Length: 508
Image: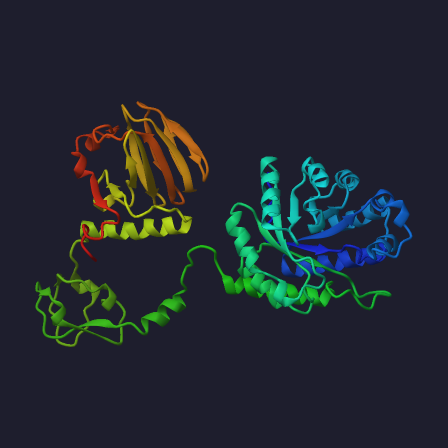
């Protein structure tokens, strides 16, 4: 089962344990308290370097680069790291470790960490990536300082090997200036790699808590920050590590951002909001005395505030409404006293066009401007939202390509073709195909071949857009299991228009 990276907080301890087990445990304790207080899915991250081979022997006592002294002065042995790891797990935190050499991956596996994190400096260290890819652990890969070509290569490398991985937008400057955070890259990466969780590995000033709000709104769903503890002899941290209070303030801003952004799908409007809008609506009132049985014209009414309970809203006004009782001048037109005309067939199809256009836009499927749109309404237009599909014919020659769209819950009835062979290729959403009694569940990128003379029907729970690639389509080549549908003339169960039918379907 793949790891769920979404809403994961990574507390990067790095070398802030100062080579002191007790201080390292204090950092873990503080992270655990924050995680519990905020009901977070959190992890503590370590860094592994096998220093006996990681540092060249000629530089073991060198002042440059300055990292060497820092690594050596805070060195922990395997037993000490294992003690910190056990303490992390006992506090119900995930454990993550960044290896900087291949031997460190061995240690990560031996000790039983949950996740491997590849740092930005190692993201194109292919020998290390090759070794990490052999592990069964999920990977998180930071992309600080990388070109787009390099990130593309990392994604291809990881997908080719079937790795369970996520990416982190990162700027490898410590601390990161505000004007170099480049948070738009989070949204860019989310679009470029739509099936990969994107996070934000942050190095900005720990007092700047606005950054996480923007990062969340741009689509970041993993958040990493260097952390430390102001305890014991430690009275200050480096310029990019956060203390307990700063971490708490950071999380508070995250929670606010999450509240502000709300749902990623269609929202349910509150009754309070609906009531507020209705207080500004116009109701429909009689402009004259209207008799029972009279067909009401627009000139017989006027629209005015206030809108009353059970009254007809001006936005729902239609011609040809009939009065079921006498209505006096200036009285409201109450819904219970009105008989409404039947909803015309063209309006049902128009409303469906609105839905499929929205689905096509959401999926970023490009249709073009020259196509035929075919509504298949096998049990009548009035039932079209339950039974049927929209078929967009792109080309029909010796070969045929159609884009088929269904909204959630719509079912296309069981049928077969004598002459046509089809291949379904799902572009967006889910598709459930009943193929000769065998249920095939398809998602984006999946394909299915439907041979001639094979019974098949299909439906969707989420809404679906899929390509039908086939041999030539013939109008007399669909045979339905339901005899009522079979006995219908083709154009009784079809409505066909050019493009979106703007001049063929009557306007609303």
